[in-house]
Image 1 (cartoon, rainbow, N blue to C red):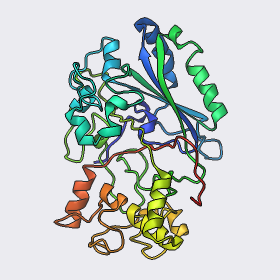
Image 2 (tube, rainbow, N blue to C red; image 1 turned 60 degrees about the vertical axis):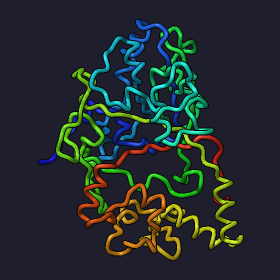
Image 3 (cartoon, rainbow, N blue to C red; image 1 turned 90 degrees about the horizontal axis):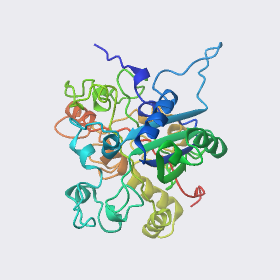
Image 4 (cartoon, one colour; image 1 turned 60 degrees about the horizontal axis):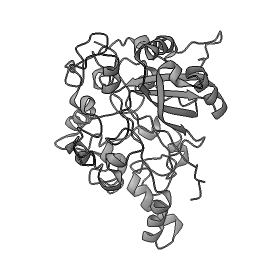
Length: 365
């Protein structure tokens, strides 16, 4: 029996990365005056982008929205509106930094240790969202075609003085999708996102559809169970958990290492980098193009994902077992057999909506 999602009740970012909207802004807000913030939210709600199918013109062409807007609450954000948080996951209740020590907020929590948020990455040193910065209540995510349109959208949603809407902007981060569709190291990005059952986006490659309950509450997951939900019936159904992570990539150090290991030989440096990532810069997977890049393959989102490891590359001679793409998605290569592997992997997928911040590096770095 197929799953039918209430798409109009699901926030659109869950099922779409809004790839046609190259500019984005993430605004981290705190509620200062509850009633004013309630009125702002009531006015904002109709503008939130849902996962409902986009309209089509008379010729059947999809009309993509000129802007998109989504919103997320933290625990402290819900509590600022006196909304109880019973039934939420432990991770949501504790936050990414974990429970802080009030006597010493710089002391690492067990969660921070498990996530590797230690040393210079410790929560106490975060720009926002850590134990030494004001609590974030809301995350407003805005998407537009270009920087000018993004600025106009922000001005529409927030007044020049957000305090009049009961809000304070604690921090903001602008980001973008480059025309090359590559992440800072120069590799094609977003190549293998999970396809959610019932989303209307049938999986075209060999990877199975993932049960909706792995990502969206009130639907059955890969265990054929309904995941735990918030007790408030208006908060749980069709909601999800969102994690915002701001990571720094040291592009120069990455490529300096590759060239050093290759003795300065460019072709060999590219090969070593591809072995670390599991794909060539074009996105072509090493399992299908083990000896040299195949840009035509990398540009095809369907063919570049039609592969497994079990029968053609179990030992990892083509795509190393420790490469980025194979560690994050082992596909059919885990023991004891391919079917069991795909079943296990389906229970550990996540949807990533990556965007770049900072300067764009040239392709010849």
